[in-house]
Amino acid sequence: MYEVTIIKTFSAAHFLADIGGKCEELHGHNFKVEVTVAAPQLKPTGLLIDFRNIKEWLKKILNSMDHQHLNELTQFAGINPSAENIAKFIYAHMEPKAKEWQVRIARIKVWESENAFVTYIPDGN
Image (cartoon, rainbow, N blue to C red; front, side):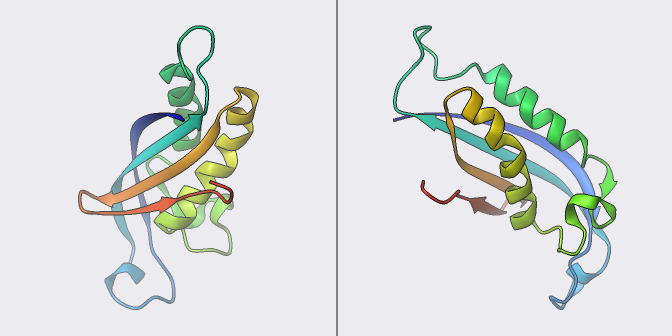
């Protein structure tokens, strides 16, 4: 099995309802996102996939959230824009592209700080 991982960042504000504590107040993060794709075999080019492809897919998704108040975005209507839900949102939008390129999304990590992150691992991985 081969894996390729890329990392990109974005900045955004949010609040998390009904959890108690300071995070219920509006605050911001410089989020770091790691996306790992995997497949059992390389392409004839000797690559699993070009890094540029994954970077471009992720850039489009992150641009929709960069410097935004996440609670106000339609993709988070009715749910907390937690790191967990951000990771799942990214997965949902990257998975169709991954299938086109015959790779699968192995995991997505969303970091809220340098020492706190969540990992979303799709079912079947």
